[in-house]
Length: 328
Image 1 (tube, one colour):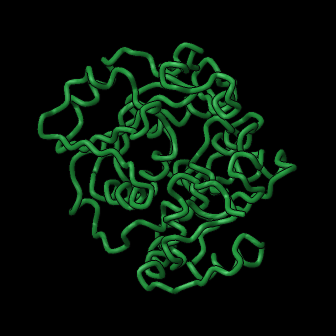
Image 2 (image 1 turned 180 degrees about the vertical axis):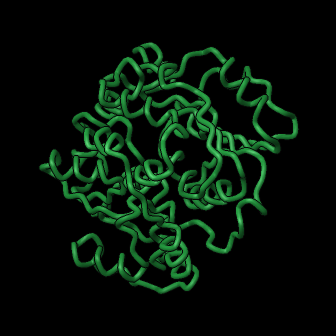
């Protein structure tokens, strides 16, 4: 009995653990830092139907704890973000080998949509250091309806990562290649960028996002009575006070101390659960997540692990950020 594919993460597991590329897994993998599950009951990932498995690999501290508390029908294993394993440990000094901007365009979601006004986004594009690489979601329902109205520099690159097998390899390369990371909101990519000490610009506001209407759901071929659609929502009109407080606080990323930023990055990417390929394999076998899969040690990923460990810095978070985070 295999779990439903968790978008792109199976391939990161296959590479890190030296598995064959056709290896399937009996556990699901959380897609990222899930805003929809912050500070409120998780009605999605607590259900075995989400991944067709009761086993889940979690890599955000708050979400793992929430699943352990609320997920009576599932089991959560806490590990580090699979994205980390695909980073290139041989990339040199970021200040000397990177440049330009990686620009994440605003995106909609199956249950959330952004307002049509383009001015904030256009201003950010006009001020972004060149060369610029734009990321456009490959799924139709995730593409912001107004993006084609934007004036894009003619020499800019556009990338859609529609291949599951290579998606994270491309994304890690793009992060490491660029000096500036432009983001529409504080989500998973914020913590990727902070881990790599990139220069971060959060150019949009979560107030510009709202829940889709039934008509808007039909326009992107989404069934309004779909249980996933009902719960995969993070529009501002849907967020509770805890979610708003956290997201507004992290929108002002550089108003926080570096210790607070590193604290959140560690919590969101599971840095305290980082394991070598062999350690991860043995532990997943121990808890019944892996069975007969053959582990192959690959020196590249052993080196990546050692490099990641060196980048996991110590920090002393403030009482304020610990108070805000504890609510999640």
